[in-house]
Image 1: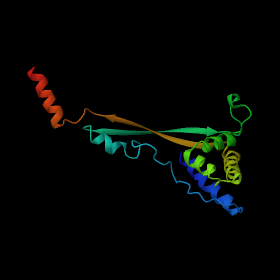
Image 2: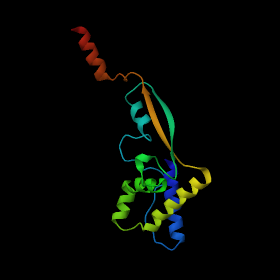
Image 3: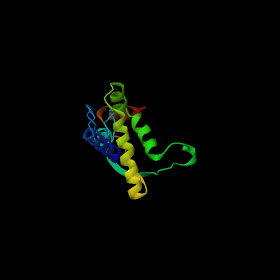
Image 4: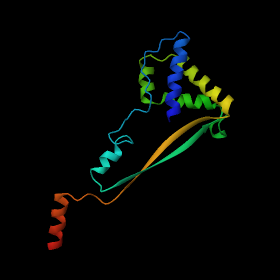
Length: 151
């Protein structure tokens, strides 16, 4: 979803260039929100499993000017703005009154420009699959296995 973070960065630049104050650090990428995430999962899994194979799959979401009838009355750019407003970092900044509507207008503008230029605004989403082999044998598991074989 790097495209969304790039859009937030560009919207901040545009709003500032138009004279608006935006005293918010916009992350360059999705902040880690869980102790187990794509950034640290292999390292954590390798502690417990003999081998960990990582497969990444990229899915694409295409935003058009007009969405399907399911979303009647909301444009593609507005749909993305509403999604971005649901992010914790954006919600916190809005509650602190640090993001003027001009920031969101710039987002709508950027997405509309992409749709006009390319026919769609593309959002890529990386899904990760972890294929783990059998658990590593620790002294405790070996002791339990030995004890169970004696019974």
